[in-house]
Image (cartoon, rainbow, N blue to C red; front, side):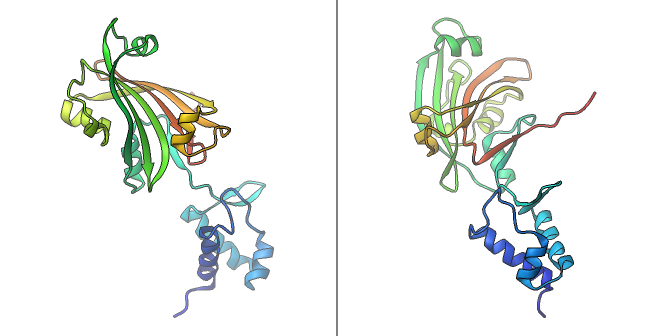
Length: 236
C-alpha cells in the first residue's frame, strides 16, 4: 500500500533538507507554492509540514513563516553536564584529543581562581572535543596536582567528571560560568577549524565539590555554528 500523500511530500522535503537544497535557517516556500509544486491541497501540505515540525526538522516562527531548523547542539547553562554526558544524551560518542598535557606552576590568574598558594602546581590540559571527527569544543583545564596526583594523559582522554566522581570519589556540586563572545586566537581557530575572523563563544568556569572546595578552572571555546546556549528565566 502506498504511503499517504502527506507522508510522501514530507519525505521529499526531508530529502531536500538532507541534501542541502534547503539550508538550515532558511525559510521554506509558502504552502501555496508547495501545494502547486506537489500537486496537493494546502491541507495536505500543512499536514506534511506539521509532521516535520514535530520531528524537529522545521520550525514555525510566528508571523514570519516556516524555516529549516538549525541543528545546533543545545547547551543548557543551568544544567551541569560534562561534554561527554551531553553528547551521550544525543546518542553520540565524543572523542577527546589531547593537544597539551603538562604539570606546571599556577600563574597568578589560575592561582586566584583555584585559591592556591604560591608555588602550588597544576595539571594544564588542552583537549579538542570531537564528534564524528568534527571539533566542537576546545577546552583548557587546570586541576590542582594536590587533589589529583594520579591524573594521567589516558584519564583525560576519557571523561574528566567520570574520573573525579567514580575513581576519586568526590561529588561535584556546582559550576560557575561566564559566557563571553570573542574572536579566536590563531591556535584556537586552528583547533576548531574555523577562520580567526569568525566569532566563537568562550566560557570561563570554575567548579566546586559539595563541601565548597574549588577543584577545577577551565576556559572552553565553543564553535558558534555548532552550539547554541539556552537558559530558562522565570518571573518571581
